[in-house]
Amino acid sequence: MTISSTPSTRSAAMLEDLDRRHVLHPHERGHRSERRVMVRGEGSTVWDASGREFLDALGGGIWVAQVGHGRRELADAASRQLSELAHFTSFFEYGTDKGALLAEKLVGLAPATMERVFFTCSGSEAVDTAMKLARLYHHHRGEPDRNWIIARHYGYHGTTYGSGTATGIPNMQVAVGPNLPHVEKVMPPYPYRPEMYGGQDTTEFLINELSETIERLGAGNIAAMIGEPVLGGGGVIAPPADYWPRVRELLRSHGILLIADEVITGYGRIGSWFDSAPRGMDADIITTAKGLTSGYLPMGAVLMRDEIAASVAGGERDFFHGHTYSGHPVAAAVALANLEIIEKEGLLARSMAISEWFRAGLAPAAALAPVGDIRVEGAMAGIELVANKETREPLTDTLALAVADELYETHGVITRNYGPTLVLSPPLVFERAEAERTTSAIVDVLGRLDVESGRIAPR
Image 1: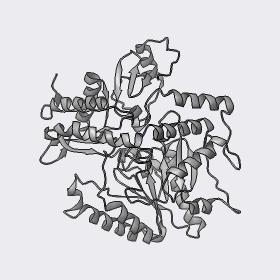
Image 2: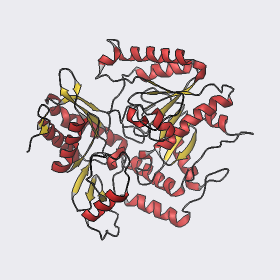
Image 3: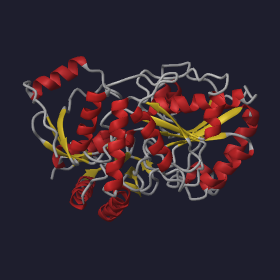
Image 4: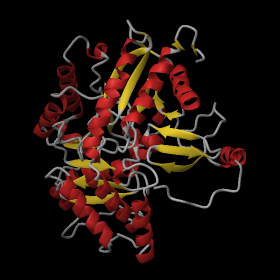
């Protein structure tokens, strides 16, 4: 059902102008002055201020919206909670009923080793918190020198000071230094790019590199390694099956914690509540956000082993860290209702159905000249575009963005390019016909892309 609201009395042009003049956008692209102002959503469809309809193949444009747009159940959950208790702090010994109930629910859904929960308002906050927890854990256990964090190139962990430093995309660290100290990057598993590994087996190379990094930094100086089960912003890149189990084994042998960043992969995106366990990560800390509320309200959660929580708070020890809106009761109430919908409507299984629809629909694209690799993991996909199929030279970001623009303008399908990779991450309520519309649109546009001339031919 669509949630009704009082429509704006401003025209689309006026709203776009207001946005252009007054809003500084996250990741704003300075060379683009156009604005796309969305005003309504239902299921996997959204409408802009001019009334044009679009298929949201990117989950609210940013890997969220698991249960789709316009869910009356979530609006009702928020309304009930607002009328009961809009907000009260979770600092010190205070808490709310919804916060306690949500923590219980998350512990029940998470891998068995996760027993405690710290609430945040975003994935970036969750990652910052996890990095602090890892350092504090070792400090309170008598190893204060363990403050290095190992992250990975191509990894995306957020944009705050700590999470932005851990993010393995260089632009995130440009001109804002000095960045957070004691963060080291290693190579990621990227099977499509074997040249990264000098002819060695991918996992073998990466384990050797990680081992050498640990030796160089000193195992007794390293707090944790952080990684996504599947690289999301890096282009939907899944590791070889033996990668995470071997990383886990190596880290554990040196007493180094493993943080699984499941901000994208959690809550059904790849067919299970949390993707780290099936990948063999056996994480000590898990960071989440996005799908926790399907984006209806800002909320994240850090899950951890009980021994980690006990090391930073308890007895005479205080945990001096928190956010004003941690465990916000309205967000918690919406999260509980959201998780109930995911369970009731079988959206974990739907994620895998979407996967099959994407694989079938994108299969014809594999033969197209600009397509280097097609990667599908649950309800997300990455189509890596190349300028040369033989050399695997990446397509320019400008042309990849032009592909996303053509899909938007000509087909009314919302996607996004991460560098040369076009990504999909639709709501888990996506229907077969919507998946087919998305994939046929992609095949059409890529079939009209002429890399040599740098243009997309008209239909």
